[in-house]
Length: 274
Image (cartoon, rainbow, N blue to C red; front, side):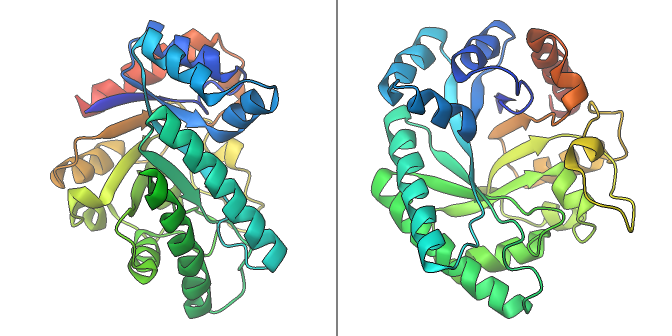
């Protein structure tokens, strides 16, 4: 079990500080927020500088979160997607970070499912081929309000892509809030298909209102409505024993002391998973 700090939980700091916080609060690893990584590189720093920092603090980089809008199909936009994939894959290779997260949003909303499946899987296949050259794999995250919001749909995309370096991240909130996936379905997975777990809590979207993720997920574990014990039990029953990442997407909590956020989310996660 790899106890991992999620960089979204400490949103208002840079990647170097994330590494230090992870070490000083007792984590094994860090899930890197891609915007923090890109900001670091855009300021003239190099990925190699981070390699030394990860080694200094004995923290493992286990995932870059995330390559987003993977359903892009317009030629110029799709080309940009592949450029982004190449950049993140090169960084992951240098960092020896094994996994990059893939996030589909709503670019194909309103299209028939077979079309959504075919177009998204085509992109996933091409991204996976880029990753293969760099020794990188990908975890697909269903998004609660997008056309791809369930475990079943995600597995169809993975199968349709035909690539062996694509698996799942089990995000408790997204799957639960998407209302089409149960812990029993997760329990039926082969554990090798799970590349990571996002341990989190929240509430469901009120019908007829706009999705505001930060409001729906602004809860520490145990404060929301997700039956966390059931989801943890389901994941463990698959034999998965890899990356458990404590994800807190909450503007209110981002105003806490960042070290306290890290300590609290770690302690609460360990109450459930140890």
